[in-house]
Image (cartoon, rainbow, N blue to C red; front, side, top):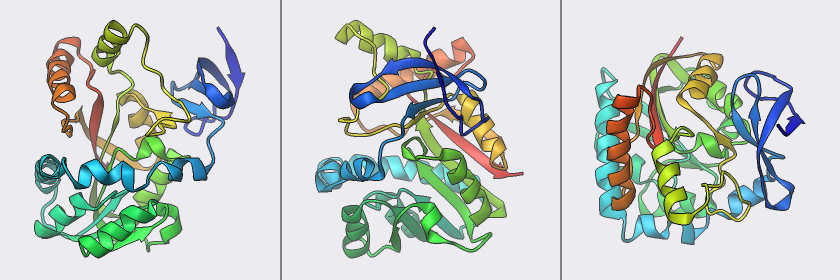
Length: 276
């Protein structure tokens, strides 16, 4: 087994298995202690931000808009079911702002953060939203600022997910709710289908990817990360926030298979959390 010395952000473990060697000298490592999978070395922020230009968001703003509105309304129903009343909502990595727009229509007082300058301009100028540019840690929100926090497929792109989760806990009210969705490393059905069609396994990282996933979670590692940051995991369920029909179909099959397998094997998971 090829191993490497590193420092795990989750458990401070110092040994990892090298599970993928990537272009540009990058490696994908799996902590031998807690099982968290991460990229090493972490790419510079400029590489992460360079992917999020107007061309990245164009399909969402144009031909996928109607489908994405339906997806966001479904997510809002979930959020509303977890809260007694609508208050202040923070969406981290709010992209072009469509979820925040739907949440505002639903009665929430919304704020968003986003690293993409293009997406921030679109949210402010086209949708009239309160969107702030930068990482969550840059915002310096007061303690206990928000009744709810959401983060849809963002944590895997951050350079320090544990620090992000701890910051969310700080700005979330003690009786608040935090809902996030992240890719699931246990997506065995998609892995099988990809290998069957492409003749090779799905890679976990390439510096030229449209989306750079720096961390890869399973239900077990996201539970450990959340508890480390001061949250209680209320529920982990398959994530159904998908607009592409072929991926959605495979996901429904994987959701049914999850019940038979006794573990979640869909492409992504949705996590509902409460402060400890």
